[in-house]
Length: 205
Image 1 (cartoon, rainbow, N blue to C red):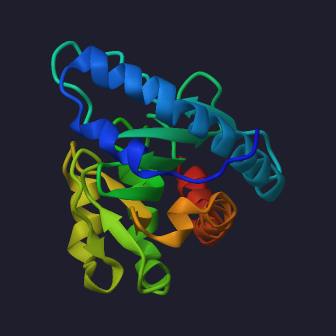
Image 2: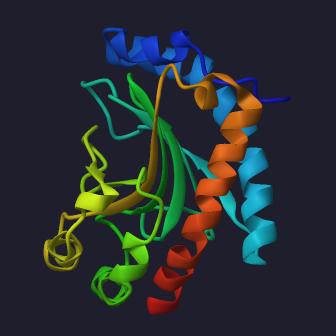
């Protein structure tokens, strides 16, 4: 199946009341698109990294009351899970798509990886100016890359719950969101620019 892009209905999923009702919409509307995107992106990353990577689609299994505010796919070099590993993400909030290299709080060797990023901070700052950084994957907001400070990466090292996700936000009406071919091109080019930092994170483990 070819990915034809995201549509308004996908984003409207997050206005559906009730955990079961919203999860049913996530599973029927968004997760099939994640399978299409993930198939393409795992092949792309495997070829560029020179090793096999695996697709994981968020199940939101721990939720018992509150419906998820976003949902995502993750691609990691571990078949069993992704949260403890540096990984790539594509996900949906109600007002944007995110495309990340993600290092979240469950990460193994978090301090060592953060030290590597601190040592390569100048290289991070040389990424495209329209890139953004999130310090908490649960929140929609992000820091524009030009505003990122060294203390933000030091906080990632020093605070147990601190996270570091870097990449792009694409608004719902962006042509790169609604056009499947352009979306995949954008995701691939974003991941390609972030591969050096992914590899730095792996080498720090």
